[in-house]
Image 1: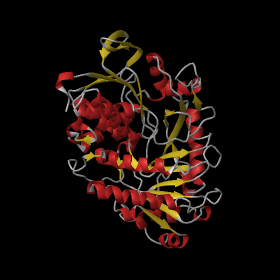
Image 2 (image 1 turned 180 degrees about the horizontal axis):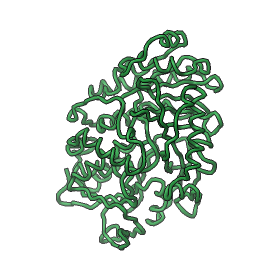
Image 3 (image 1 turned 180 degrees about the vertical axis):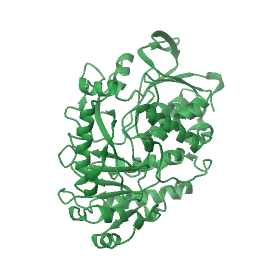
Image 4 (image 1 turned 135 degrees about the horizontal axis):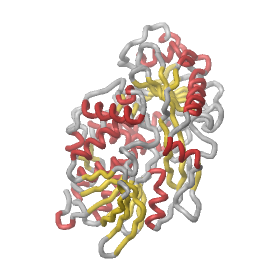
Length: 491
């Protein structure tokens, strides 16, 4: 795959979802990659929990973004099946919300058609179930009948998934119909484990933890001179190509390299609770609302061991006053306030964790009254993410390039990393670093060799190290795909 006459060294700065996944991708096609991460482990950034196979959580985004998210999610699911929780999402519109319960219907029909087209292109794209089952509408009368049925421990039909909703959600607060859609869960701890285990096994990749990149200088004869600090020792190394995947710190790397780009940084948090639940697996549940208001969207994400992750898209729960900020003309790096940086680098106060988690519980209990009994855990999932440009509603994002072999991989949703890697690979082909035969293909032999059990054990290590319940390392529902058949090649 690699052009043997011009074997080059690539530095990826930032070991979050973007950096680790692009490092995995490039090392799998035979390129020599060094991954710089100043933290103690990889993939430890803003929370993800959802595979946005269509973007139906976001009423405000364009159809084109939704189509992009659908395609990217299918690619992601085929490449990382061991990190996916194969359970659907239920979307509800509260009566207090100005939205129409049928407003998503044109989009759902459009996405069903797009999914049908992708299956026609490649039968292995049928990973969200049959196209005709991509979504299902439930009217009030049907929900009332479902409420009379017994819950099923492991649901297998759309109707069975809706039984706990029918029995325990206050249906009088909602508009109808409700929508069940095949947008699955995505486990960040398992994704991180998959990526790290692959990189550790690949002789082409080098992981440098606890390593801070301080300066970048481009030279005409030797390429990029990277100044970095590890274990209080300063070092210098030359690289032919730089990929800035530093997440919310991407602007600092741009500044160090002498480039400027407009971006926004947003600090967000999700809260981890314990709830005895109802003895049945639940779908993920979304109660729509206007972002940033007291009635912002409420998101219920279930995990094993009675662990429930909560988002409440209000400034008192998931969002923060002054938590979204843009950079200025003097720097590519937006300046988050000290309180946010303290949370990222020093941790939260237990009082604030308790306060915001209790608010999240109350927010959800408006729709699921029995959820008021949920208990607070000590550590939220949190972080800051960068959004390229000046549109805070952007959800599908990608890659950008500068002179002298410098690229940025700036993602808003984690499934966009493969799109970024594709675009970077196209440039590397043009530069002669790698042969054209690899374009768009993902024959990830090393990644596919990692067992589900190994991923589980590494994910458990991460939850323990970071102070989270072990339930976050598991999935409620898993499916077995032949990993050889899960390879994908999109032009």
